[in-house]
Image 1: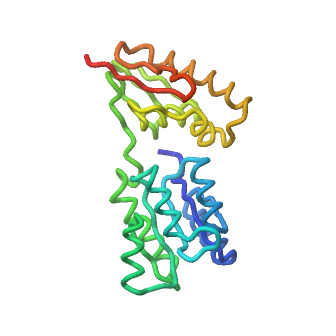
Image 2: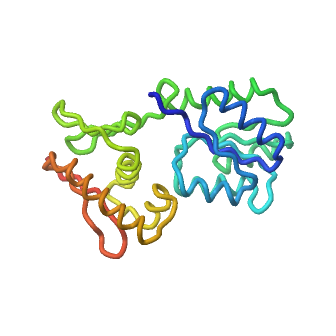
Length: 230
């Protein structure tokens, strides 16, 4: 895949945060840096990320709280904690909060990179997220941004892909309209809502090649991806 792994980095020490961000960008990661936990959680809800790095001690929301709230909606994304604490109890708290690893300050950049890559290797296929789905008689590949049926492939735009991914992940449940707007468009205003309706129409056309897959409106709530039995 040519796209970069997207990392959400929350670190209230601006010097360290900038240093980490620049280092990871130099290693070909796409990094969004936040200075506190509350901002980080807002960014997480607005965009799609592949990896989260959280400082534990932050104003407004600490790293453990942010991790718990992330885990309420996403139990797959890898989370790495950064902290000055080294007590066994603190590490256990981090794992209970949903963390995948725990790095104690001070640390070498090379160690951070090694741990990050190790987590990615465990969580992703060949270092990339395993996001290929069988949707009825369609094959959907999030990374390649494609929907395939019987060897015929449709390439999706980035917004089409992000929106369809949310539908697939919410399969058989209702995808909340405002939540989808915030995650894909960053704002749930009226004009973005009209734009999303156009994208939904396009996606309906793409899945229309299947007799088993349908995107329906749920009045007053959002959308649902229905998969019929063959």
